[in-house]
Length: 344
Image (cartoon, rainbow, N blue to C red; front, side, top):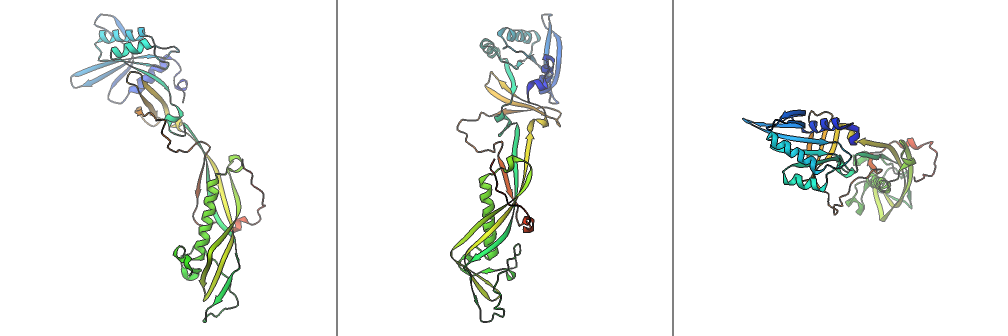
């Protein structure tokens, strides 16, 4: 948000400063003419009246929308007006800056001088005024599972010794219909399905860690197939239907469905204005902003960020990746043409 987008000329700058001080309690007036004790006419860009009981205090605000620095003579004019009108405070606002003599003189007379400027990207909050990210939602499925060097033994009471095959049922908690692990692996996994699901989830994590932007970041949904080798330090022993299966190694084909979209957020669109206000006397900086749904502006002090601040933050262009629990139907992979993926 640039100052020129909000302020067209010096009159607009005075109106901005007037609006910055409106809070529903102060009496803030723009372009006021008062007669001083000397009888001289004094034009005040912004007049602020503080009333408390029987007491009233005046603050005179001078505004200069100039292309050059404010000089000492300009501060002197404000100070003369303060004395003539018996004002309690004098304040100066500009967009350019102050000559060194003007700064020193303002400090000596108790006049606060401000510079209004645009907020830096850091001051908007990292990663900046405009947040531009890519979102990837990753779904998984298991397209194929192939065991190697499998052996099977039958219990004495096993009726069906002709079909020793395993049937995998994902997404069920009923252990009676699943393949129960009876080897030492049971300390970590209860069923063969949970082992396969863990391997599939690890595949998702590995994809997410690579931060691969698909097709230059276009909005799209793409499918990937990844071959995964699942070896066991000791062969996995699985019990089902009075049979024990011995699995030394399993290969899986994990399918990923990646839905990619772009997220662009301009933080300034929610504000009528948002600027930095630098107090040149007290070496402080503030944000002065007005939300487009608010009646009044808000001020908050800007904290200086130290050079040692290495706090991590999301950078523009980054990929935000989230994974979805469960599995999508592997039938979605059928009929798709396999093509190599290009990094961009």
